[in-house]
Image 1 (cartoon, each protein chain N blue to C red):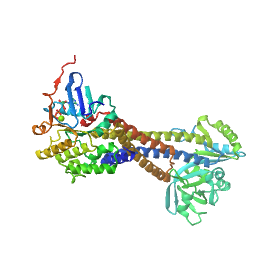
Image 2: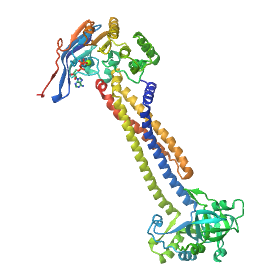
Image 3: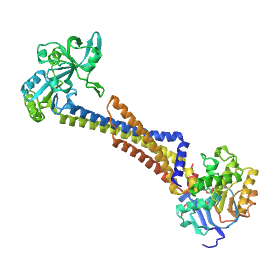
Image 4: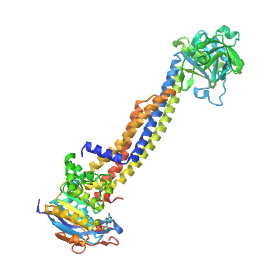
Length: 396
Length: 234
Ligand SMILES: Nc1ncnc2c1ncn2[C@@H]1O[C@H](COP(=O)(O)OP(=O)(O)OP(=O)(O)O)[C@@H](O)[C@H]1O
Ligand SMILES: [Mg+2]
């Protein structure tokens, strides 16, 4: 039998049993789809976070409460990073770095009776725009040292808050409510976008003291330190360590530079990718078992047909080739559909979350689907092809 | 090659099924010679081993012991693919239970042996159409087996057996499922093929059919044939 004839034969067999063919294909499609989507999300997350961190700048040193990024937000850790500690740090580092302490509170903002819930209020100092890229203003200016020290209720608003209340209107000098208190708008920060579902522009900045007295918080979320040059980074790190060690134990704070941050986060995302990959592998395995099952039934059911074909002169290879081609066509079709859907879904997910299609996952998934077809299709076909024609014909 | 006029020579053919206590001997010490161009009938009561013998003759099954020479070749020396080749080219088998593929049309069923013989599509379609027409099935070419009567299916099975112009035609109760009229038609076809020079072997347990064969053998009486259960292998 030539290839063309085999194709016709296999295609006919596939269409002769539409439901079974569909189910076989579906099993593979789901498995391949899951692998591609989950791996895409894992690697997208990793790229995203790495980029995000490096965009902060190479000279950034982050001081956070707790002994690592992993425990910083965990339960049961007491935050010992106080405003006065940050003040002390700032005084010691005046010649080598800019120091911006931050507290973050989720609150409600109101202007002319229009409420915005869940806005991040960030209490910080006038140093913020010098230390952090997000502090750049497009309208007005960040609040000054003078404004901060006078104890005035001034605020800088994020671009989303600005767009909501003041589109085509000068916001400077307008009064908004942050929580229950009135603040005068002095500036609007540059748009920095949405990522991982979080709108970085849905924020308001206020003086640290104001945040302290209004919300009663004196523990800092973090202290951002921006060294004046890259060469100074190690020196500044040592300085921070010296200052903080006088008041805190080793476990009560940790110092993260861009590199260590990327490392820590890579560890987290790698773990995540692995977990996602594991889930995907399981679903592919389940798909494979489904295919095996259907193939087994298909071949067993057609033992009589195999016997007849052999009786009429089919050689063992003719039988093997027929079933092999059938299995491969089914699983490769399933694989291709899975790849297309998986890539489309990954692109779709990228719009709201992050995901990047990795080629190795596509190749892996495709290879796997073909292998599933060959292995699970071959075994029963091989068995059937070895039967003596009359035994196969008698099979019920 | 020896004695070209002999198509089949069987010596001491035995067939047993099962092992140990379950061992059953179905064929015992069969000696059979069939000459080219013969029309041989095989009779015997049900379960006497007629089909088993026919399957061995048709290379669908192998004997447990004994020697079977087909067309001058010792069949025990043939490899699997060589057996397949001979089944394809030299033997046309009409099964007791038709054995048509249910999802294929009459035409597609008839074509099957030609596919494995590597004959091209146009040629084999013409041949199959010709055979079906010859057997009076010109109006049923595209029908599936379940859309045809038993007699029609039997004729499709005969057409399939003739597809590769085999020298030897084996028919296992070709009239068993048919009424007298259809049975006569089938017999007429087989006699006609025999007149053309083909060797025909037919199994039947109907007396009127059996006497139409030029030569008749009987399992049990004429042949050294027993059906017996051993108790314990000693
Ligand atoms: N695969 C098998 N395993 C065990 N016994 C078998 C097997 N095939 C056939 N037999 C036995 O061999 C004997 C002969 O069977 P066979 O089909 O050759 O009979 P037959 O003469 O063709 O009968 P019928 O006229 O009913 O078709 C029977 O007793 C049957 O039970
Ligand atoms: Mg029989």
